[in-house]
Image (cartoon, rainbow, N blue to C red; front, top):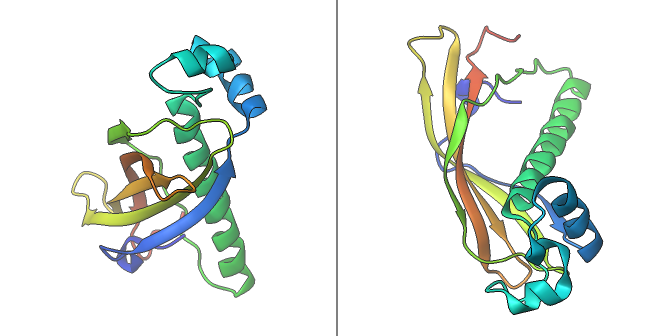
Length: 160
């Protein structure tokens, strides 16, 4: 994990892909979003979504899963090189969540982010805030989801 001073506006990172199968879509929906178009192929075909569709919350949750996995991989590599690793703080939230196109059974979604803002905080000395636009794109190149994520990062000398 980078320190605040290491983060550059415009930095683009890709952090993984995920295949949304009918089985996984139904499993998530059964537990967290039991709407007919997430649970039944025929109901999905009859809906505005045009097929068995993943819950938008499922698409967003996968973004988090892949982002954390990528962060853990990069942290392990940095530690193996003997580098000091920053431990990020929590996220104070996200904004501008958009589900642009449905994610249907059989779609593979790739996730990326671009840093759009970096600033120190006055209220939390030693910390800063980074905002990044996360984008999810299907195998056809269509953007299916975007959101603006925010996270606290320590400044140099504040490795927690």
